[in-house]
Picture 1: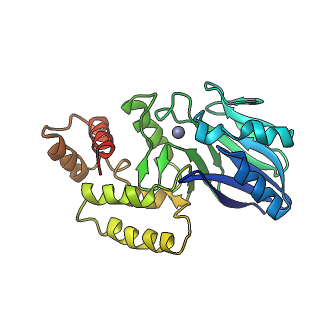
Picture 2 (picture 1 turned 30 degrees about the horizontal axis):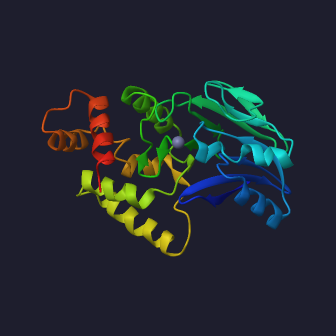
Length: 258
Ligand SMILES: [Zn+2]
């Protein structure tokens, strides 16, 4: 029996603990201290570390965790992850030692050049997607191109609608404010704002999301829809050439969105 627990870190990061009994792997440990505190408080031993991309708020805690636990470090082949022991890319399959969880790996470049996702198969599909797909949003494009980010998001969007999404940050309410600006008439977005705000007011994470919920409310997955393209065109003051153009326009609009 696997359970997945968010360990809050920094201002709005989540480090995901994937626990089976008295052992757990962690995904994207940007800081060791909250992970060590959680392990100690729950009597759990660390069995593996998984990284989605090289940013310090996702891998900064690896050396301190490894100083206490001699565990494997899985990470993207094309990025620097401290003390990485297993270099992964598209099509790789691993079984997380200690918890026996099979995962397959996707390349999802765009936020960073070598960003990867970890996916667990049906009947209980889940994806750990770092800073690529967020609840109601997506990561900034730091190292890749809009084309790359669009196709990475399309790859995630093609997963089963019930797939649960474990991403790296609690950005959901801010993302939904932008989603409502893009699609002001959307009842799905309005309902989700009420639902997610209620969770935050009770101190709960809004995550995991699901692929199905993102199809309904995430403007970045909806960029190819005629109504969303029209909103992007109105914002840019020019027609949209294609879905990537609309996606890139939305991303720039969001970057400047207060
Ligand atoms: Zn990042």
